[in-house]
Length: 207
Ligand SMILES: [Zn+2]
Image (cartoon, rainbow, N blue to C red; front, side):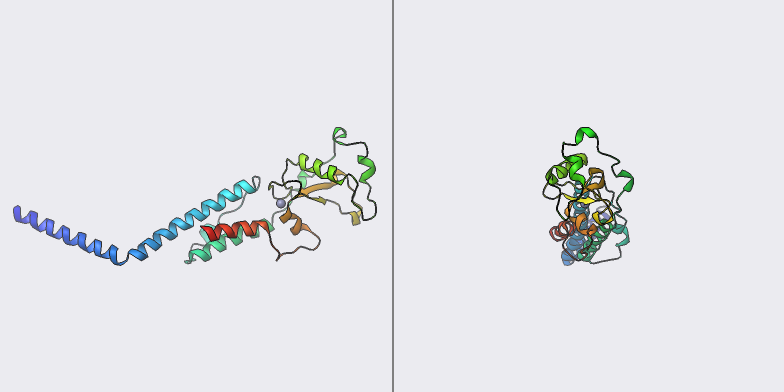
């Protein structure tokens, strides 16, 4: 029994030494794999938190996380995920069923109706008041993507443009954020800077 015990201890020690030698030899590779996994999980969690907070009423599709699994370079994979989300943002369709039907009389002001008529290329004199009314009506959110806006980042859009006979009635106006305004402008600048791209790329680079 005594000798068997010694054999057992010796063989266990040899195994332990072998495992230790293996871990020691490949420690950098093992740490790298471990770090990559942690880094990707952290990135995905940061992206989800950012999108949920920034676009509270829009559901993004995260199947790209599974679809990009064959990409072994974690940095490239992060960019693939970010680019897919940005593409989804570009494709958001405005929910036309939510277009306002009318503006209650109690929310109008004395010169409201008069200033709804377009006056050449000039904006209505009560433009700020109209912006403010849109701001409050849509609870400070972009009508298309639901991100929060302020009076400086609110871009009013006419549902029926002036050239097609649209007027400045509030029910013909929706508030857009800067990104959505760029996308829906008559001359969309597809390659220009978008806040969502800056924000997601920053998460890629810092996680
Ligand atoms: Zn928007």
